[in-house]
Length: 265
Image 1 (cartoon, rainbow, N blue to C red):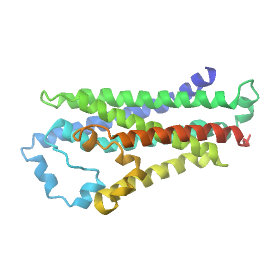
Image 2: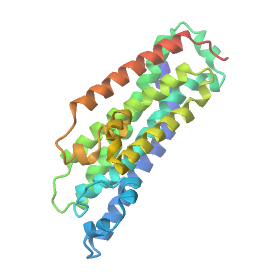
Image 3: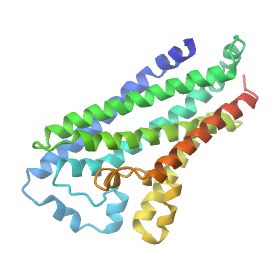
Image 4: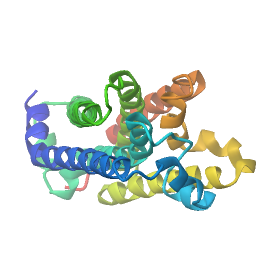
């Protein structure tokens, strides 16, 4: 419990800054929506004239952006990128920080097993990403609802937040497993972020070329797209199952590899 509380305290400021960032992202997006909606120009017509490649790069799917929920679906990919980058970096740094800060010897001479240390750290990371997800959910419901003109938004936003949380967990354990496996764990955060960006680029490439759609199983950004979960009937079982299997395997890898590694003290 002391390790858990220490980790929560050490990441408190970071969580506050990320939460403010998520709130501002939602707020700026909905202010932009209000500005476009009040301009009198048909919003969907503006997208119709844009090249498909640009729409794919910007993460703009087949949304009816004349509605608040449709515009939020367009905004969601940017919220997802922010949340998963936070999760990947957190998962890596929360494991690697003892070696980075040269505190491994101080921590592991205490009568506590490595498994208990990792459990406390992962629980702290879990709570951090859950709180960030909840802040994003509350901000989204409040701000999107303000501009929705009576449109019910809570259910649509809630289902995207569930998908976001699953991906946050996935990238968190990608970061933690890389930190446990690599000899130089300090570089795990940058490597985890690189994996994240690579999978995002693959998702954009799939949008640009339908012939490589089979690659969607390699990129988590295709698992819970807003256009599918909000307007396409919810989650696909295969993607939920695949996510759960990956989370379980990578969590196990974190414990196994960290338990065996030689720590740099």
